[in-house]
Length: 87
Image (cartoon, rainbow, N blue to C red):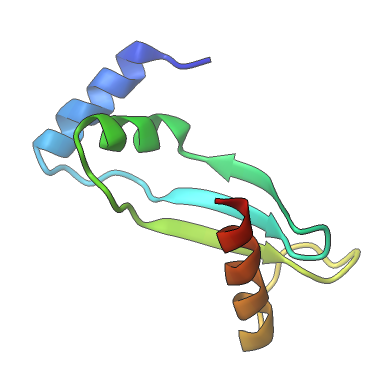
């Protein structure tokens, strides 16, 4: 469900060049899917304003039963491939 008031408020903040939090993606490279996200309203506000890029923090889950952690370069490359496939 989209809260249009929230989107309008974010658009006003973006137009005023105020800081907003980055978007978040939780990527499971084992099962090759995005398992969580945060920032739909920020992304929609940016899209409506014609902003084509936003900062996104990507959390990589790539080892069973260990949760989120610092990723190795190989795991980062794998996450990039998974994200590219999900476009």
